[in-house]
Length: 120
Image 1 (cartoon, rainbow, N blue to C red):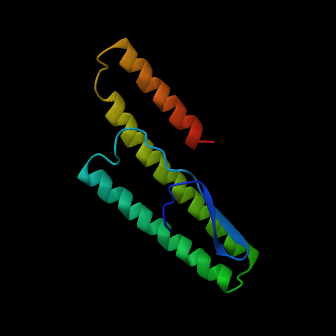
Image 2 (cartoon, rainbow, N blue to C red; image 1 turned 45 degrees about the horizontal axis):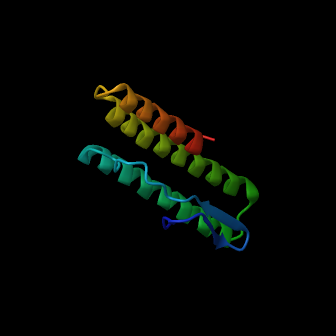
């Protein structure tokens, strides 16, 4: 599925709308290491495969139970991806001591905002 740069709805089929939240610049690019990047990209590819399977099921008129099960699996996969990327960001931001109280406060404020925005 494409990444949107603004909050929009895009129809996967006539009955399902998927919301793409606005992309926010949170400062550091992610993931930080080649190993993390490889893991995250593998997760994204698996999620894309799950979404493709969901789209095919919807187009074929599959029963509700398997469709709901697939949606729940996708939600779990996306939540796992969110946790992994957030954990990498936490390690990067807080792995080094803050140079000042102001920097420490800014880091905490950023993380608080990030958590409020994405873990609703």
